[in-house]
Length: 309
Image (cartoon, rainbow, N blue to C red; front, side, top):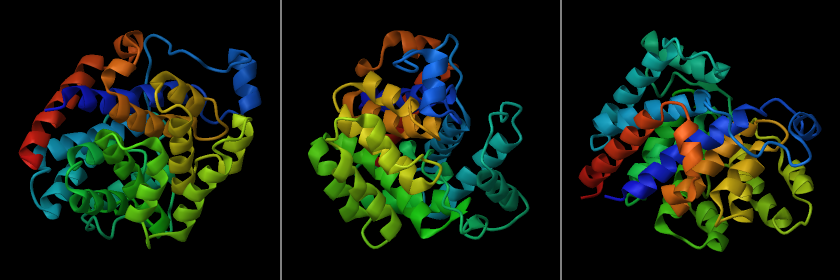
């Protein structure tokens, strides 16, 4: 049981999300005006996360219940956890319309394969799949099936499929300890044939990864409101700082656009790659529900023993 990597993944996404929550919807000049020349560099205490983490938690709880079962059972558990979240009083952190619509459709009785918003490729299906990447690290076919199924219940678009499959697979690659310089070809091989838009977004990372001006590189990759851009921006942040969790999420939070999702996805990859020891202890202590998050990671790690043998 690799508890350190499980905690790295869960705390990694939640803390990245909480850091980016403070800068979402702000341009880089606005961020620097509010936080200084270097932008935001530290968490408040307490640090609150967003719907990105709340939905990741819902998926993790569903996988703990049913992750060793067939896709119908897994998605029944996902549906139930999503509906529970939809009605939670804590669901007050600007959740996306596609997510809410898809969940509402499932609650009305529509099958999860038909409940998602047709044509929606927002980042909402990609931001929440890190637990899938963790649990099915050793079963990539199941990873792909569960990631796609968890995505189409709210977002029905091939590019959204590729983004949520890709985000989950990047966590798996990080857990495998694959060399960062091999992540892009491995990712594109796994998502081949799903979405040319996604492929092109990821290939743009190679064009700008070594630019001296990171802000220009980020601008080149987009703002992260759509799935392929969110994953590309998160992967860029990780590849710039593969050995430094703190720098990954700070870079993700100091971006134009959807900073919380970028830092959340980037944080999950970095946390999976480096383990929880790489995350500042002070940040773990001030993230909301820190004890619950640690327990969730522990239960997910226990479930992985059942799934992976």
